[in-house]
Length: 460
Image 1 (cartoon, one colour):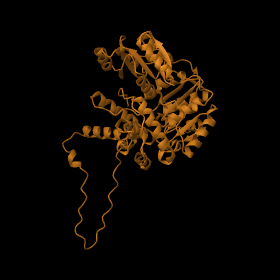
Image 2: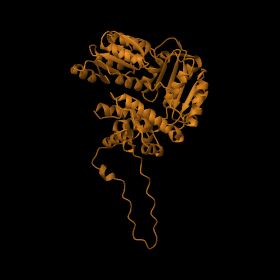
Image 3: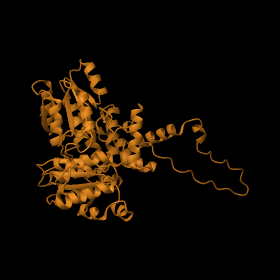
Image 4: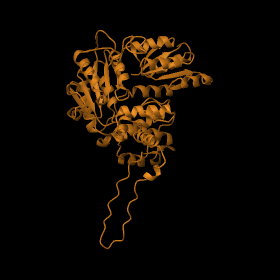
C-alpha cells in the first residue's frame, strides 16, 4: 500500500487526485503547506509527495535533500501554468501532474512506488509450492530471507507475505539498501534527532519507526556496509534502535524481511557479511527460482502484464498470438520477470491488430556466441586470423568518455538494474552510483531505476 502525502488544498482539483489515490488503495496524508508537509515526512514518511505548484516546490525539494529524506516529489497544477511546471522541474520535482488528474496516470504512479498489490501470478508447480510455504510462514513473526536472481520478484513476494500476516493492517515499508549512499541509508533506517548533522533542523523517524506494527523489507541487504549490519543485528535482537544523535534507544515492533540476489552464506565465508546477522535473518529461507526455471509462469505473467499496460496506457486489451507465445517461451530471460514485464510493456505499445504478434516482441540482444575454432590441416590454405577487437576505434577518445559510454550501455543492457550492472562492470554499487551522479550533473541521460515511473529520472 503506497503512502502518499498531498501538499495543498483538497477542496479543489487536488482533492480529485486524493480521491483517486485512495480508491486505488493508497494510504493518504495531507498538509496545507510545505512546512507542514516536512513535519509530516519527519514523523511518518511517505513513498510519494504530490505538491501543488502554488507552494514553494523548490524549497521543499531542497529541504528534503538537506534533511536526508529520500522521497520523490511530483508538482501538480493546471496544464496552462507552463511557467510553474518548468520552475518545479528545474527545482528538482520528478515530474508535473496536470490537474484535473487522470485516473490511469495516478494508478501508474502508485504502481511505480508500491509495486502490484495483487497476489503473485503463479501457475508453475515449483512456484506454487513456494507461495504455499510463504503463506504458511507469513502467520508467524519470524524473519524471512528471500533470495533469487535480480528481477525474480523478491519484493512482490515480501508484500504477499505481509498481506497474509497478522500485521497486514500495519504498514509495509521497503528500503533498497543498494540504492542509497551509506550516510543517507543510516538516516533512512534509524532516523535522527535535531542537530544530529548539518541540516537536521528537527527530529525525524526512520524506516524502522515508520514500519511500527507492520513489516520492514530490507532489499539487497547483501550490499549493506558491515557497520550498519551491526546496527541491524542489534535492532532485531533488542527490538530497539538508536536515532542518529539520540541519547536513548527507541523501542520498535517490526517484522523484518530481507532480500538479496547474493549467496549470503558465501558472503559470510568471505568475510563480507556478518555471520550472526545472517542466522538472525535466515530463520526461514525462501528462494525464488529464475524465470527460466519456471516455464509454466511465462505465459500467465505475459498475459497479466499485457492487460496491466493496456489499461495503464488507455489501449485495447489484446491477447498473444501463437507466434508471440513461441517467442516468449524460447527466450532465456536473463533479466527474469522484470525483463518480461518490460518486454510486454513495449509489446503493448507496438502491437497492431487484434493480437500481440511476434513482431511486437522486442527482445534485448544477447551476446553473440564465441566463434568456433578453425581446424587447420597441413594442406589447408592460410586461415584468416580473426579481426582484433575494435580498440583502434577508441584512439583519440578520452578515457573518461569511454568509461562513461561503457557504463551507460551496460546499464541499458541490464534494464537499469544498478546491482546487476555493477557486477558486470566489476565495480561496487557505491562506485556506480557516484559515477551516475556525475553523469546526471553533466546533463547525460541515465537509464532509470527499474520499477520507477517514466515521469522522471530517479537517482541511481
